[in-house]
Image (tube, rainbow, N blue to C red; front, side):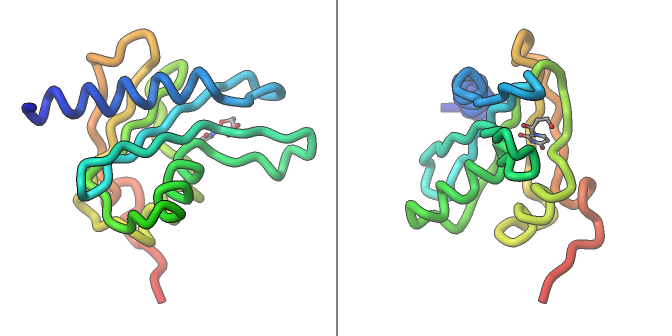
Length: 131
Ligand code: THU
């Protein structure tokens, strides 16, 4: 499979995860798909709560699921929403726990996966906090 094919497969997985979002309050559905170092795709969607502050972002759901399954190294992440949006600051910091600056993040609108934008963790979070 070419890199382009695998990027599209990851975006497609994020689009599928987005359909499972529990976004009762914002109605803003987000899907994420994380490609592990050994080639497995782990999905996440945002899970909102009536106590709004308990809401979980799709990216962090994907990362915590992957870690739970024993994956600690990642190749790339795809995020799909209504439009192209970059991950929030909290998710950037959580990514920084596991990923280096070059880590690629593909963001796309659900109705046009082919026109994704590629970002890197380093450009989104240039001065990461690390102990
Ligand atoms: N959200 C994500 O899932 N990822 C982000 O990076 C930003 C925001 C979710 C949280 C909430 O359910 C909805 O989008 C609106 O903020």
